[in-house]
Length: 421
Ligand SMILES: *Cc1c(COP(=O)(O)O)cnc(C)c1O
Image (cartoon, rainbow, N blue to C red; front, side):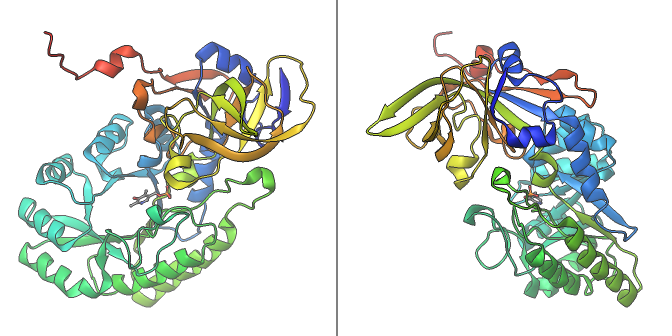
């Protein structure tokens, strides 16, 4: 095997001695590959974020809800949040106790809310009308409310989830209305939470939002926890030397804020964060096979099998993913070229990587798409009746195990009802 362009996976020792061209051949492509050591490390990074003693990390499972993945997160001592009954179901299966699950719902039906209540999962509602609904379903119960701290952040308009232009959360000015509904249904507000958006690389907006959230917290006496949200970013431009989020600096500021709050209020409240991407993105790559290289009107296209059914982030958010190149043969790349790497879906927006300058890519090469573990497989689909990829895990000892089978044709017709029967 030849490493044509493999800087980041080398630095991380991602494959731990496994040959990616052989993994691609053995399991077929596209293939999601996870590294357990890196996943565990990311869990530990965040568990150690602050020294404040009452601190819980909830992994935000929508980023990646693979069962084996959740089992590892559980082993690392994290708790989880859930965005749907399906996620609650997966998390219970992975071994999380109901008390370790925090259901952060948005515009849900009575049935969905009742599901969480019956399972004993703490629920956060994000509007006055949903708080009313909760009160009707579970009078006298314990509940959390998601507030909008008025500050948003994120890598794309679609993922900024606080501030003035978002559907999420209850405005800070509505505290009195919240109190009135709590009283009406004899509810106990045990937690408040926020989530300002996804992928901040600078902790300032986050610390600022926490300060606003703490002001809201002071207006409620029964709080057991304050959940500061997720959004911790990762550097997608690693090969260009992009720096990671400065966790040490963020942790220091946060620690001061939390300790000051405890001192000022005399309350030893539990603080939580709910990162998804930070935990799951960097421990995964997608292996892909190059099936065609061609030139159209002077532009070179590399055609591979990672369409947007496999990885939706580039078409959905204009996201950047680094791409590395492995080759089974010893044939050399003579030059660098600027190419667009595209998938096999019948839409011209199906571009994985636009205008990248890389060593010449040849048919048969194995491409390795970096940082694919967050919002990767979780957002994959059967569009174009393509089969969702398999997932394998490189264990800490280097052994590779299958943690999800590739879809087969039967998955395409499951639940469909033919008129011919
Ligand atoms: C998506 C989401 C998260 C996780 O966001 P990341 O950017 O992946 O850390 C956390 N909390 C809520 C409420 C979310 O919707």
